[in-house]
Image 1 (cartoon, rainbow, N blue to C red):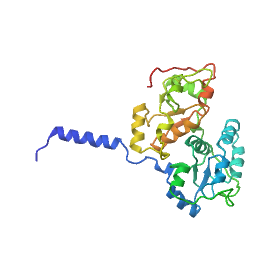
Image 2: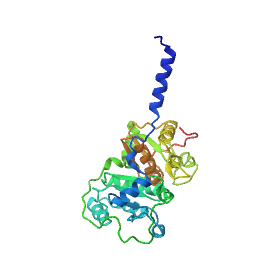
Image 3: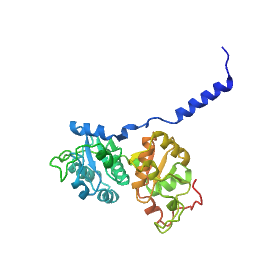
Image 4: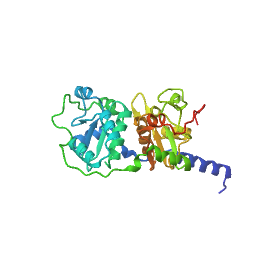
Length: 296
C-alpha cells in the first residue's frame, strides 16, 4: 500500500477543522424545545416562568406558567442582597430549586435576565425555551388565557445557596483589568462600543473588550438561538475564547445575560456577568474607558 503524505495531512487537517466546529451545543440541556416542554408540562415535571408583561400573559400563555416581572426582579436584585429575603420572595412565587425551571418570553434580553438571576440565587437547573413564546405558538400548543387557576406550584419554604462567582462587581473587574485575569465580552451595539451612542456621562468600551452583539446570537425570524456552527463562527470572529475566564457586560445586565447564556451553551465554564454594566462603569469617575475606532 502506498501513502500520499499531502493527502494524509489534508485529511487530518480536515478532520481537525470538522471537530473544531461542533454539530451540537456542548451544553444543550440549557435549552428546551417546545415539544419537550409540552411533554414536561403534561407530566408536571417542570416549573414554567413567563417573562412577558402581565397583559400579554393574560391574552395567552403556556399552561400553568407563572408570570414574572423582569423589571421588578431587576430592581430587587440591585437593592436586596439578603439570602433570606430571596428565599421568602422566590418561595412565595412557588419556585422550588429542586425542580427544573424553564423561562420563556418574547424578548430574550428579559428572558435571559430572569434566567441569570435565578441561577445566581442557586437554582441549579434553569433553562430557556428555544424560540420563546413565538416558538410555543408556532408548535400549535395549548394556550390558556387569563390568570391560570393552577400556576406552577404553590408557595413553599425553600433554602437557597447563591453562586457569587456568576457575578462580578466593578472593583473586582478593575483589579482583573490590571492583572489581565478576565477576557471581556461586550454585548452592545457597535455605536455603544465605539462611544458614538450617548448612554452615560462617558461613553466607549471597557479596555480590551471584544464585541459580540447579543442580537447576532439569535435567528431573528424564528427567535431561536443560531446553530452551534454559526455560534462557533461568531465567537471565533469576535476573538472570544471559551476556555478563558470571561466577563460579559452591556448597559444594564440583560444583553450581557444573553451573551453569558450563549457562551455557556457553547461550553464555557467560567463566565461572570458584570450586571450593573455600563450604567455604572460609564458614570463612575475612576474607570478606564477606550473608544475603539474599529472592532477588535
